Image (cartoon, rainbow, N blue to C red; front, top):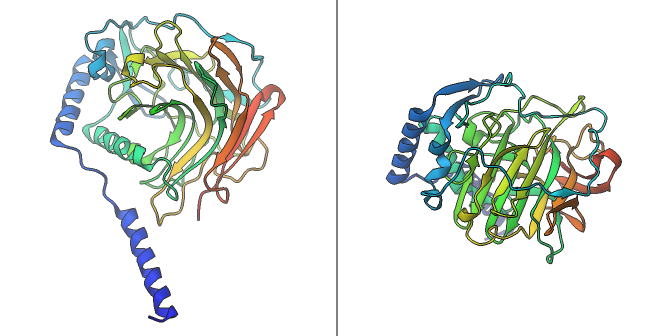
Length: 391
């Protein structure tokens, strides 16, 4: 075979591989999984006593605290939980907390709700259809296999690098953006992650057409406990306690270069007595809920050994990559760059401190960039990240 013929064959093979990757069908759910989804919908519909509609059109059903999907987890059955549960204490802080920087606004838990909330003893679950739950289940099944799989998976992060350290949590103020150019089979996230072994917690914002069928920017949570993993509140694990909708909420439209800059405050904290991992969101760090320590297989039954902040994206081979962050290459200007500021960790003594000994990681520096800018006045320890994606 001559060189010309060899290159022609190589081009055809590459084209076929890219086409097949982009046309792969998602894993099919088993009959038992479909039945489980149908039973879950029936339970949620029976226990809902009120509906709350946000200004962006999302509808949340107020479900009896004990009927929420969290308690379908086998390790949470026959345990005593209460909707009034709160952390036994708060971490001590040595981080200077002042007003937000100039031209920065923060998302409130009441944003777009007109102060509506569920009655006492009920929690808000975003209304979903059978098709919604199937899409969410299929996405979760494929998500773990995609992580750390270049060239389809990309990330741009700042991470803790001291392997001797352990953490009771951490926090950040993360800016977010409206991103339209995310295809059906892609996603883009800006988030914070804690990890120990196979156990993982993530909290942040994202655009995920695979699950929602649109390009809205929403708040999400995620956990992995050994081989079990789940996004948001549609499957067992995360226990909601706050009567106001927040998880999966659509965030306001915002674009790079426009003021004010919008951001969301995130805090993840391990209770020193119960070991439960609490999520706090919003301007007042409202306690949204927690992952009980009992659901973790070993790693996050103890403290986290690793924390990172930044962005991640996924796109099948053969497609134009999705944007990350603000969708722009870095300008080192917070009006245009997506950022996580006030990077903090909570040490073994339950003291919150500025994140130290951090390093950067980016899988594709041609299309997704990251910089650790260190400490910058009112922004605290800040990192910036993002890019337009492969073209």
